[in-house]
Image (cartoon, rainbow, N blue to C red; front, side, top):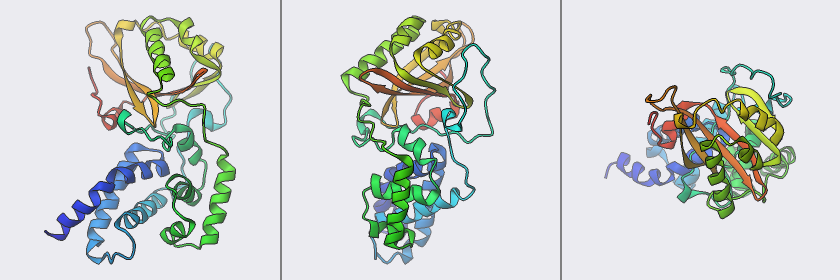
Length: 311
């Protein structure tokens, strides 16, 4: 067996977890895919010199983490609209124009059969990580998500163990408690029922039924549109403006994203037309209802979810 074949056989089992790691670091499924490709290329080129002083997994994480840190050197973070520091929108006013220059946070495909019980890709965590400096971000992920020891993280980042402890302490203080114990898993019967009722409300253009599914502090946002809304009354008034789209011109399917229930949407502009990819809507569902709905209005996300562009 050649060294190339040997490397592929040994390294490929780590590809998906490295993809998830890079997504947590970068907040973009597309950037994560590119970084994993770069990681495997770098590792393959250097494999003949790999001395085995660490495990292959640790070595790959070192390369991937450093590639992510390099990608983050420009200092740009990927926010959500509510993270821009602007006030909630007025549903009676026009929406702001889409911000195409902003690098927005993206969702990540998590098939239902692989949902992580520890919720390590939930959007609240990924969004909070975006507010951390890159090295703090890396340390928090390695320590609190991947559960590496402080000395292992120090070795990976070529810093001291006290430096790791200092970085993770500052990171934890900044992001606060992200446990989200009240958030339901996608297959929880209550979550399934809520999503079923949401789909029925959309199918029937039933704004009142949709509003009843929202928690009192619900947030609704639609990147790249920077306008966002909070509370059932404001969200309901905004959504009422959308019911001009005939239900028969909309198709959606239930999916999972970021260890959360989600819907993929296709729209057509006229009866008999082709349904075009529209958005990936990720839902945060609690026992009280939908706490957060994010419609990622970027059709380029559909291939990453294995979804067709047209239907």
